[in-house]
Image 1 (cartoon, helix red, strand yellow):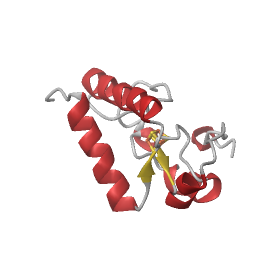
Image 2 (cartoon, rainbow, N blue to C red):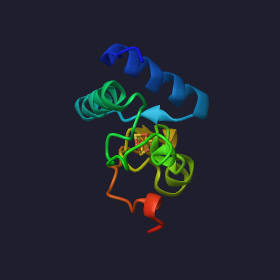
Image 3 (spheres, helix red, strand yellow):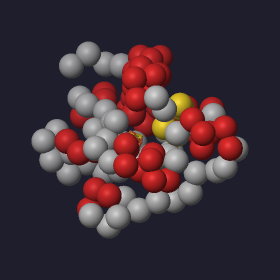
Length: 110
Ligand code: SF4
């Protein structure tokens, strides 16, 4: 698996946001730290494990939390941002509101 650098991960995140109609969190420092986390995870595991979650040990076990995770659409629709707050709904971003901690749907707590 070829290593990725921050630029490649950033490009990936831009593509995801454009395809889904989301925007990246305008807090660039925060967003950079998440993109760094995604890059580290790619280089460690070979896939974009969510930077806010722990691995369950394999790609198949982690499938639902490979970015963009299976819960992103529902979270963004309901809360205005994904669990990590990397991706935001455009109107939420425009409102200037800050993302809040939301329940992790991974374990059915939502
Ligand atoms: S919560 Fe989902 S969409 Fe957001 S960074 Fe993590 S994996 Fe990606």
